[in-house]
Every structure is written in C-alpha cells, then in structure tokens.
Image 1: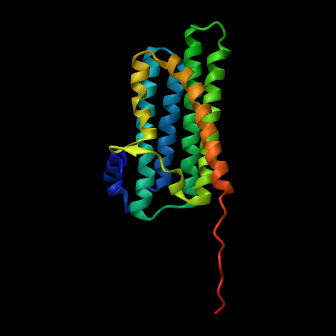
Image 2: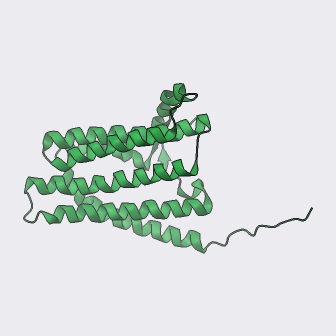
Image 3: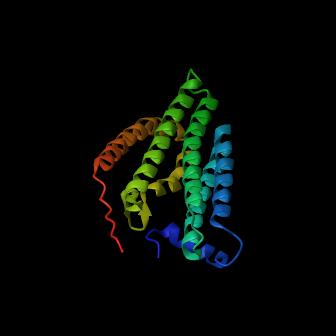
Length: 210
C-alpha cells in the first residue's frame, strides 16, 4: 500500500476502474481541468472566489494521486503518461502562484498592481525550475532521488491541503510574499542537489559475449 493517506484513499477509489477503459491520462486530464478552474477562481480575487478556488485546488491535488495509483494497479503506466502528469503538476503549481498575485493585485491594497503579479511569477518560475530539475534528477538516478520527505502518512506537497486556511483568513498576501522568497531559496537547494547528482559518476555498463 502507498505510504501516504491520500494515496491510500486514491487507490481505494480507483480500484473499480482497474479493468475499465478509464486510463491514468483521463484522470490526469480531470486533475488538470479542476486545477485550472480553481486557479481561474482565485485570480478573480475577492473572498468568495478565492475560497472556492482554494477548495478546487485541494480537490485537484487529491485527484493528482489517482492517476498514479490507477497506473500501478492496472499496469497502464507509460512514459508519455508520466511526463503528462509532471507537466500538469508544474503548470498547475506555477499558475497557482501567478493567480495569487492577481488576487492580491485585485484588492488594490498595494500601490502598483504589477508588484504582486511579479512576486507570484517569481515564485511560479522558481517552482517550474524545481520541477524541471527534479525530473532531470529522476531520469538520472530514479524516483528514489526525488522522493519527498514524509512523516505520519503525509508528504511535503500535502501542505497544499492547508490552502483553504490561507484564503479563509485572508492570508494570500503574506503567503505570496513568503512564497516569493522561499521558493527561490528552495530552488537554489535543488540546483545544488542537481549539480551534485550530475557530477556523480555513472556506473559502467559491461557487456558479455555469448
């Protein structure tokens, strides 16, 4: 069984789909559409829109586990599907931070409307770089090289489940500021890890004659 609670629940929910025509890519598309809808809501700004958007993003984050679990129990995994999943994750996460900037700008709380959007873009680009480098590390050393820290059945990315608390408390502004600082710093750590992995000598493949 998966090590995290959301992945365990996802596997239970997709088990009836094992022998159907539903593929992991269908679930990835569903996750993408729900996530984009949530991002569109957050970008509108306003207390109601951002809260509905946060709820949709949380649902999208959960659905993100279903495609991988269906692939594992049905044997329908593919390189294209894996790349599609990673690309969807990157797109949703990047646009999420940009939508935070648009939501803050819509309030008029800051003198320049471009400021929050720029901060959101910086955070989003940093996250995009993290996704790209993690994908490169995974292609070099396997999934073990990009495994997230976990404890008590939760992973680092599960912090997104707390997003409704940010919107319910009108905390998007401070959250955006923290992300625009924290995401680039974390990207720097991933760059160092990437450099370390790429410098590691690859095992020499030997061939035998028959």
